[in-house]
Length: 396
Image (cartoon, rainbow, N blue to C red; front, side):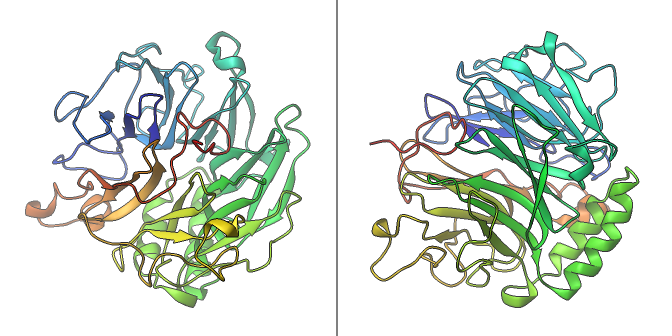
């Protein structure tokens, strides 16, 4: 999800609600909602065209309020204007069918667009957002920074124009200067880093799906074999994530200082963190976390580096939310989380019935895979200036 300059919420859809969805075919489109939750995109199907089929964990909005998204189903990058009209060609930007399953995508403060291909370990670059100059920087494991990738999933840019990349089937993140991607470095995390975000002083918060659990290590090893061979490793990871529990049996967070070293208190686990997926930073630099889990499906709030904005006595990484997190609103297996300019916290329900998406189930369950829309917690966070390009900017 991303919030545009008018406070509207854009959500990329893996699947169509009510369809007989399977993980092998992602065919969802693009949805838009007003700040009060009113649908602004067409009923059922949402916005379509421009090569769009099955948006993964990749959606960004540029300074002109254009929407960029990366896709699983069509193996492409797509672009829409703020009215929901496609700008990309009918096949999307697919580099003559060279792209694989696409995931993270960001717009940088300089106007560049960067995207990741999770199945082919690809790094894609649109200088100033110009498709005519776009190129695949690297692919596979022959040259940097792709050599330091392992199923690259999500990315963020810090205040020094360095790009941080999480690697889904590893225990590290990769960092490289936007001006010279070949100068790649790796920094240790826990198992299966996914969503990540940069706070106001340049710390990088990384969601580690499996934390340090023994079960997670075995699951990740199986998934890595498929991922490094270019196969679809999603079903293996999903089955493993569903089995995770809170605390030592579940996921965690790694907090990396700007130099890549771990901050005091890292890793963070427990108190409602089961399978952390995405991270949002609010205007007080509090950290908000979504959970891809059936168990304790809450969202979590943590104290950031600005401890003066936290309850008395708290330090960076302490939990502000209660044990189990904030619940309600029909939360299901969540992926993204975002803060809007009113301080509302938006959460996306990705899966309702995970077995219906990757297993053989009775026909009566076959339409229940997709999650049921978005949940919003009104006014719970410190507002953030939209669209978010680079680290979050508070509204004074």
